[in-house]
Image (cartoon, rainbow, N blue to C red; front, side):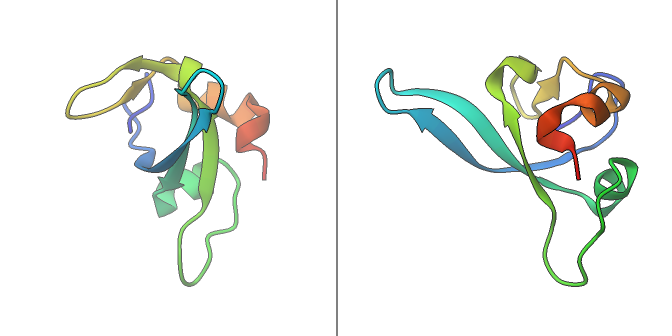
Amino acid sequence: MVTADGFVLGEIHSGETDEKTWQITHFYVSLTDQAAQALSFQVPFLGKVTVCLPVSAINATGEVVVLKNTLDDLRKLKECQP
């Protein structure tokens, strides 16, 4: 997963679906250590920081998922608050 300004955010870990519509509503993203630090999360010694991002944040999908948001925009999302 990459931000709109080209920053490598991490990998999609899993998703959350709406049981009534069977549509994916959110993605859980395991952040790279660099992304976690850039978003002011404390990087754990073992494991990864995982955040939940809404599907509406996605701009394009293919080999790589590209977000509509820049890294600075993600800092403001409540889902990305440490």
